[in-house]
Image (cartoon, rainbow, N blue to C red; front, side):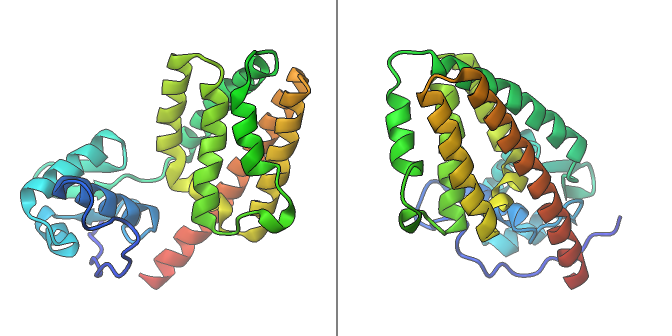
Length: 237
């Protein structure tokens, strides 16, 4: 596959220029470019080309690229350069399946656990009147990750929480797209509320059933949105 010509970055949302090391800044910016499909799946590029684009020297850039390679977002191509990892929906499906197992088990545990301080925190965020619901896709995406992460964390199983955090990181590239449509934001609030009520009422099986359906629907939505975004991005290229 031929390398696609890289275009200048115009978004400044990826990273705060004053935060972290140069390598951290380059990492955050390149990762955001991947998430925004400014760097498309299977795109190839050289270090010198990308160094000009993100305005950083080669050493911190290489550190950022190596970190993204370890996380599975990039692939190194000896004597050629780098490639954005192709989207592998089979792997995403497997990660979502594992996520369902972990979260449903955690919800069932939480339904019978004491104390349950996590429920109070989640209720303050999700059991709110419609007028107080957030509409910003990025903000809702952050809260959504916190919701699912806290459910697992509240189970008290540290290894389960660690694996869940790794899954969350790996699927974020597509999962964040679930909140680009207002209807999905509303559905997320409604579904989270039902899950929380089931856990609060100690209905463990109902909580697990609702959570499974919620995650499966999200998986279907983000696959559709991702494919649509890829199609549009390729038409513009």
